[in-house]
Length: 142
Image (cartoon, rainbow, N blue to C red; front, side, top):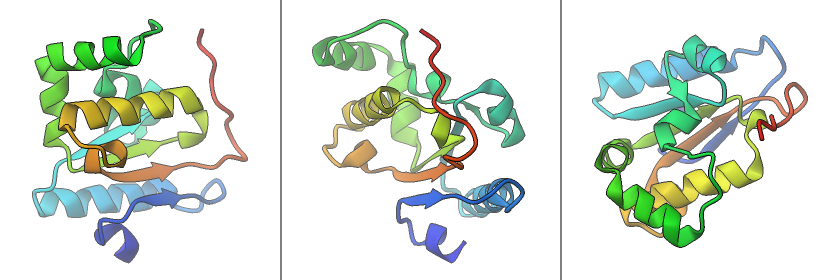
């Protein structure tokens, strides 16, 4: 918790039952107490429901279409709800990170940079990735 509270980007990992979700819930409670808005996401709806969040696809507005960077940038700028949601967040939590395909991870980075008009990784959001790469591999839904 001390490391999370510094605002550093963190990869939280451990074996099943190690307490990853417990730590996430405790950190989210701490953020809420300090009025810091966190985007709480996971790759699947089931995983998101376990942490009272939403899917990464829903939060980041990931489309299933193959878009050029210019098309993605225009789509983000045209979607005021998406842009406002990303700008409002100070922390992005992604649970079950092992399920996220690298290209989706990079698209979320691009969307955050675009919406927040920042070249910093993920537009300057604190990024908390949680998961266990020995458990669940990336899911291909194409």
